[in-house]
Length: 323
Image 1 (tube, rainbow, N blue to C red):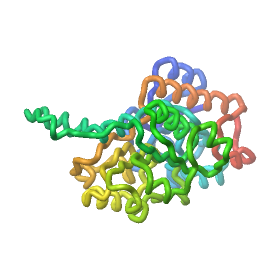
Image 2 (spheres, rainbow, N blue to C red):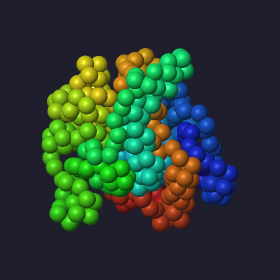
Image 3 (cartoon, rainbow, N blue to C red):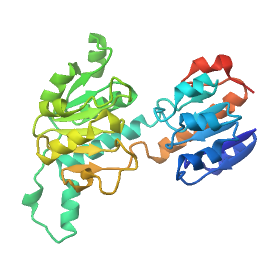
């Protein structure tokens, strides 16, 4: 059995050994420069562990022996699930990991923007020390609007209460019991946008959520509000956000994800001072990396043992070639 790690992931020696015990292991430490290079890496593999690069229809069609893909993250919108399923290729992911890390990053971005930390840091390095340039706002008493109340959104709500914030939320399944448990007020999206001082997004990328925050939605936000996106880049209409930020229609944005990744060096977002940008690292803590790799490798081990877990396309099981 040939196992290929197709692009960079966190893979300490302990986990390499576990994979080597299952078969021939080939590990790539650099991101493929093209689809052709990616296909060359995976075309003979029985099992592929893939990180952020994704797995296209073309790559699935070129893979002669492929039986399983283990995705080294929760999201799998960069994997052609339809083609995988048609070919009986099982795809597993790592559900519900790093929600503490991502939730904490929400507040790292929020506090940075509210207290102008990034601006103060860059100007201080230029010799500017006038405190009057950096007057910001505290979080206590502010309204945070949390879009999505899954594992990450729920943790964001818990932390917000620690700052004595008031919480509004949009969820697909509101109930009085859930509102009481989370200590939130469930509202519709328009109300949340209009009343929140901070809007933070915690929804998966689906046809229903793609560009759910566009020009119309940004226009409903307070001019003093900030937008935080640690979900998926395409949940926000980036062009509309750039315009809103340039015209100061909202106060700022903290973005860890983008419509196109890596973010181009000349992207308009990089020219704006009222934005804090990070390169899709909200999940990135030692604790979350360990957890992700543990589950990702376990997914492979369980598949090889004939007991697959964390499957995102269960329909593929019927025609899959389990060991």
